[in-house]
Image (cartoon, rainbow, N blue to C red; front, side):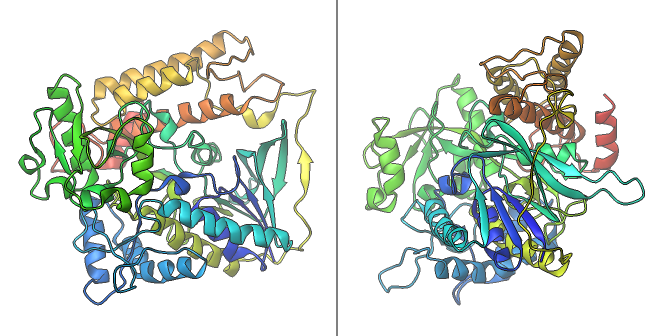
Length: 540
């Protein structure tokens, strides 16, 4: 039996904790309350092959096509072959999937899929249904004493061994809890902390999506991959970023310009059901041609649209909009991180004892652009596989409860904060810069501007050691301040670090691919070595 820490409580974290419960000493750490995650916000469904008219081979082909040739084919095969079984497992865990007139599970169509293979619960509340069911099971494990649950606890850093004669190994994590920094020790650490949508001024992600796990993995020396690929969802409400699911277009909704004319057929033969990178870029460019005025989603011809999409209907009503009667203004917003901590097909990272699953991981299944409704599936499939890998390499340590150590030394600076990215930018300033230069379209000049601004922030902190905190999102001087930093300061430091890494990856990939659009270069058909380009960009 091993001591295992799972950080995050979306579908990936909950699945991993439930799989490990009873065989290991499991602690689940979550920054907010249990189940508050990107999973809970997911309106779309979960993709999987169940039924005689669809095939795993078709799901694989659709995923590879959407990924623009950048997917790991074996990882995609692993994902798609396990899809049906994972959906059945979710149903057995208590998720009630929608049914059709015959009583069979209803299958919906979404962009870039060849067959209807999207399963929903509550119409457009699939993520909430999954999160609720798995969280209920997890609380039962907590009540039975098989899992320790730490809510309102922020991951700060990954603790690694410093034995120069052995490979670097994760030995636990530091967390911010009840105003104190504490250390949790473990034989295996599973990152399931989700994405980093709060890096951008416009996002569909919840406030907690600040890339804490990815940033911690970077500081721990874990390899990362594909950080230039961030998916922008085409249809969100301007301003609040309220997401209008791809399933609405799958049901027949159309995209219109300001004159009320369709334009997607001019861009792609699949029209409104093209892959997200294609639709988002088309919307972005159409709006630019309209001097920034929005395009519209027209769902008025969909029969019983309010009954099919009750959550979206209620959400739009809060902004005075009626899905059945109004043209809905839409704009792209940051939605999903295809890149992340590089893993194998069992969630292992380059740091021994450290696993990554869900959106924080880069398994290779999404490539340069994620296929709609593959993310929930990825979280479930690779969480199950990671749990199996931990079972297989159990170190058979004793089953004593995890030790909690007060790691705050009031005489010395907190060493784990020395490597945090220092920035003089406020959160709002950082988000505006990334939206301008790491958004839907990118240029080398803009990326270098972003890197310069981030570098200026670090230099300012080195030159002006004030150690003061502010309430506008500026980071505390985390390297020298003896006080425990605020959650907001840690989050902003994490976002600044991720912005730097993303910008360097985006600068290195000079050709457009999938969700990464470079407007200052032509598509590179010779495909210069990405490693060489990244080394060159990192040296800039």
